[in-house]
Amino acid sequence: QVQLAESGGDLVQAGGSLRLSCRVSGSLFSINSMSWYRQAPGKQRELVASAPTGGNSAYADSAKGRFTVSRDNAKNLMFLQMSSLKPEDTAVYYCNGRIEVAPGMEFDYWGQGTQVTVSS
Image (cartoon, rainbow, N blue to C red; front, side, top):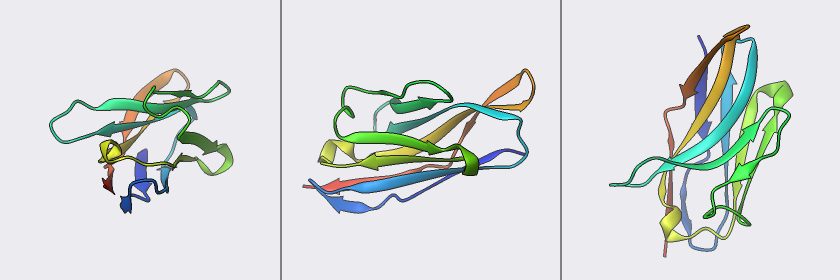
């Protein structure tokens, strides 16, 4: 069974930095894409950054220039380096993976989320 697990969330002051990690475990055939989403209290979950396998990363406007998504494909890891953090970045950050468990059998998987709190 495929599982995603985030780590790295913390309380940080405005202007600070954090690095989130997401680890994919379990039996899988391939990872087609991985993304970071976030959900702030009272708001809908929103896409922050995506990193398709073999493709170009993409970012929400709010993340451009401050966040960098990267992957270690050999270890099934994804990272989100966040800098110049703002209070409005406060949210639960979720890892998403579009993963084939067998050829042609692609599913969406989510981690449990990691809390990022940015104080002013």
